[in-house]
Length: 125
Image (cartoon, rainbow, N blue to C red; front, top):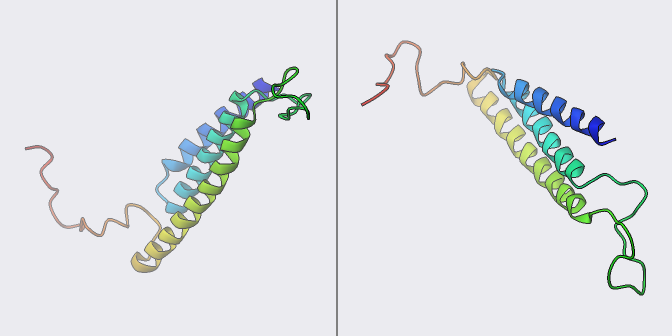
């Protein structure tokens, strides 16, 4: 099962990078979300996916009696999901506000600080 998840992680990373390199803000935001999901799935896969054993120590024991799955990646992923959702909501509001002010979601059209007819600034000093 882990090779399937490894291929899925690679696919998510590829799609995320492809969307981040786009010129439109909405595609960039979707690329960031997919990239974050790829990282979460990578952490989950690195924590060894084990279906047969739970991450619970039996009652009355101080240490695990046999093999058990690692609960730390699951806790990290739950925290990362909440953080990435709030980050996406902030970026979405920021992109919508920029669209309202400028009137375009194209990154080349958002270059308000660099007017079209002006000469370029010096590249080196």
